[in-house]
Image (cartoon, rainbow, N blue to C red; front, side, top):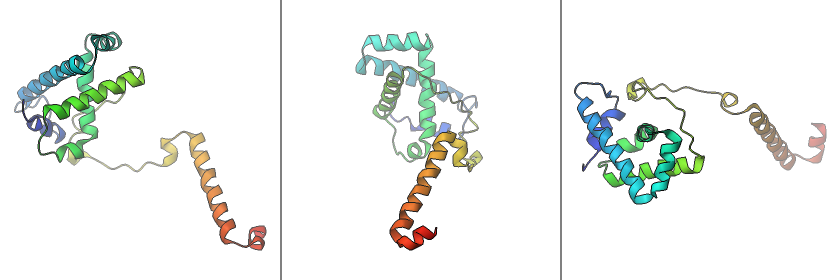
Length: 167
């Protein structure tokens, strides 16, 4: 395949794989990406590395890596949608980075489920989340104390000794 844009763009714009007008292209794309994953294992890694993936994820390891490949595309949707041409070399580098990630992380799969509704740009909703909901309470408390310490240091620099004592 030359340009993979005709397969990737519809997915990133919300087209579902089971859509009759797209399902055949999606299956062709999925098959070619799995071939690229096998190709990446053969040219960039040893057969033992591929055997590790089979052992860690089972015989269906190509499907797991394909799903993670899709997730990576979704995470970088804005960048990918700006590309004029998506060639095999670009996709091979994404796949290689995914494999390196798994090797460095001790074979932990990303535990994120995505639905094809999430791919639709019209359905995106910005959610404001408070910092204390995203990070551990201890880290949040530390950051609050650090901010207060910074303010006190700034006050000591800007205020005279009498003003600081009065506080």
